[in-house]
Every structure is written in C-alpha cells, then in structure tokens.
Image (cartoon, rainbow, N blue to C red; front, side):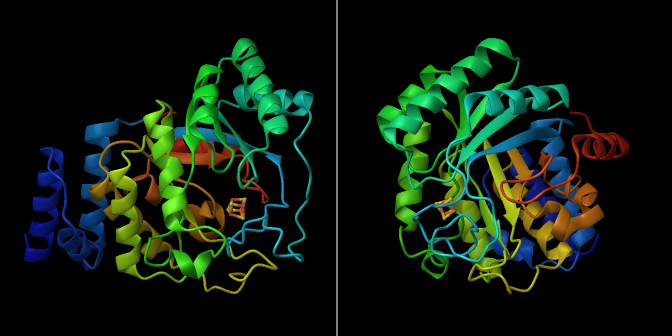
Amino acid sequence: MDNESAFIHEMMEKVISGSDLNFAEAERLIKTTDLNVLTQCADNITRTFNGNRVDVESLINAKSGNCPEDCHFCSQSSHYKETGIKVYPLLPREIVLERAKLAQESGSKSFCLVCAYKSPPDKDFDLICEMITEIKNTLNLDVNASLGSISREQARRLKTVGVKRYNHNLETSESYFSHICNTHDFGDRFSTAKIVKEEGLELCCGGIIGMGEDTKQRLELAFSIKSLEPDEIPLNILMGRTGTPLALQPRIDPMEAIRTIAVWRFIIPKGIIKIAGGRELNLKDDDKTALKSGANGIITGGYLTVGGNTAEKDAAMIKQIGLTT
Ligand code: SF4
C-alpha cells in the first residue's frame, strides 16, 4: 500500500473508531490523487454507520418565487426578474394532499413541503400546519418542511403537528457567504438551524457546491454543518439558473463533486448525505458512483423549479447497485 492509500485507510479507521477528522486531515484527503481508495473508504464509513438504505424523498414547491432575499443561485428570488419560473402563492390544500398521496404511492418514505419565504407569514403558517396535520392523519409518510427562517414558537408548533425534520441550509461557507447573498448573513442561517435542533425537530442542513467557492471553503462548510449535528445533509450541485447572477458559472466536474461528497462523509460519518439539486444535470449516470462514495440519499421526481428523474428510474438505479430504499 502506498503512502497516499495508507493515509486514507488510517483516516477511515480513525472515523470508524469514533474519532473526528481535523481540518488539516480533511484538506489532505480532498487533495488526494487516489480517488478510488477515497471513495471506497467513504463507502465503508457509510455502510458502517448507516447501512445499505438510500433515503428517497419527494418535494413539493408549495409556494414559488417572490422571495425578498437575494441568494445569487436562486431563481425564486424577487431580485431576479428574467428567470422564467412559475410564481404562485401557497398552493391549495387539495393539491398539496394529492401530491403527498402520489409521493407515497411512488415509494417515497418522506415528503418535504417547501415554500419560498424569508420567513412564513402567520396566515400561511396556520394553513401549512393544517395541511401537515391532514397528511399525518391520512397517509403513512414522514413529513418534512422548509419554510425559511422560523421562530422558536413556530418550530415548536411544527413539532406539535408532526413535522419530523426541518430543512434550513447554510448554503455556503461563512467565508464565502457574502459572495452569494447580501440580504442576510451566515449567522442568520446558523441561528435558525440551531433553533430547529434545540426545539427537538430533526435538522436537515446542507449547502451548494460549485458556486465559485474553493476546495477549502467546501470543507469549511462541512465542518460548520457538522457542528450543528444534523440528521440529514443535502448536498446540492449548482444548476446555474437563467436570470440569476450565477447563470454562467462553469459547471463543476462530476469527479470533483464525488470527491467532495466522499470527504464530507469522512467529516460527517453518521446521517443522510443527500445528493439533492443538480444531481441529474451535473452527475448524470455518476449518481450511482456518488451513492457508492459517501452519499446515501436522493431527491426523486424533480426539484423546486426544475424537473428530475422519475421515482421509477431512481428505484431501478438503486436496485441495480445493490442498495435498498
Ligand atoms: S431565502 Fe431561499 S427562497 Fe429566498 S432567495 Fe434565498 S434560497 Fe431562494
């Protein structure tokens, strides 16, 4: 075994025995020339702590666009007028319920209700709580939510109506945050994620790679996420959306994305690292490789403002690589 391979195996043993990687070790891993060994060891860590199951989740964009924030990657920001997305207020209850039913029928175990708000207004929040109560009473699905910044009281209420997990991403590292958003800061995102955790909801907290950040900043983001002890970590790969400031950002190389996923698994050994937005566009068939390199979750059936693989296609892919849902 050469030095490089020996170091990766040493780091894997360290993580499997319950110790944390430090920043310098993560930096050496992400620069490795032995991507095969890195991904195999990341897969071993995944299997040790998380088994063979792939978490498959469906989303509904229950309120689209008109968000007052200026996140440079987001086509739902009201700062960017030419994005061509559908803009609509909170969907009626019947449509949300129907979509939840379809998600269950297509094999999803969880359903995430997503709304583009800075923070949810009271009237919409009440309606959302009623919808979630009805889904929980009529279907056998975990219900998750992503409604922007929420207060402690709102977090408590979501827990009471049966929300399992709340999503609030850090998006990018603290040192890069001002390059991708100017209407709020990293601290605002971190505080909401902390409230979610402190109020007893499971936390889903991740970010986006490929927005111009450097490799070190991808690690910085992973260590910030780890400090929040999330249950699920969505890793999005930028899809440069028309009309946004990042529309022409060059696409990340698929192997660079896989290398990042693998090292995130070394940093965060337990929990669902979910390849989220940008999977189909950036990874294409390499999504199989990603699920054998540290990731153990996917979003199926499309994203907030763009389509994706069908649930059937994803289920077949998971079976083909010997994993289960
Ligand atoms: S807060 Fe969320 S919905 Fe609003 S612009 Fe930023 S990412 Fe988009």
